[in-house]
Amino acid sequence: MRDALLSIRDRLDGFGVLLSGLCAVHCLLGLVLVTVLGLGGGALLSPSIHEVGLALAIAVGVVTLGLSAWRHGHLVPALIGAAGIALMALALVVGHGPLEAFLTIPGVGLVAFAHIRNLRHAC
Image (cartoon, rainbow, N blue to C red; front, top):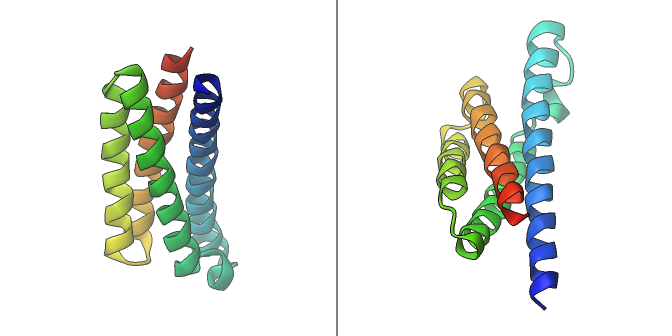
């Protein structure tokens, strides 16, 4: 049972890294395509995509980072992740636009880094 729970937690950390990376790529590509090329503004930068993606990333981060801190007792990844989650939550509040991207990108970077730290502690 314990091994199954650790496997699930590790998969969630891996999923968190993937989700954080996809979010950052989406924000960067969206800014580049819309700003530089003037393409894809309607679908690519839809507010609903950002809201759903950020909400999902926040949920995965809170659950996984909390469970991992409880499991291995290392609080640093949880604190790093909490800082990233705070930036991501703020991005949801400020509304759609460049400020949202400027909050989201470092936020997902911190959360991804925290997930990677958790995976290292899991070994």
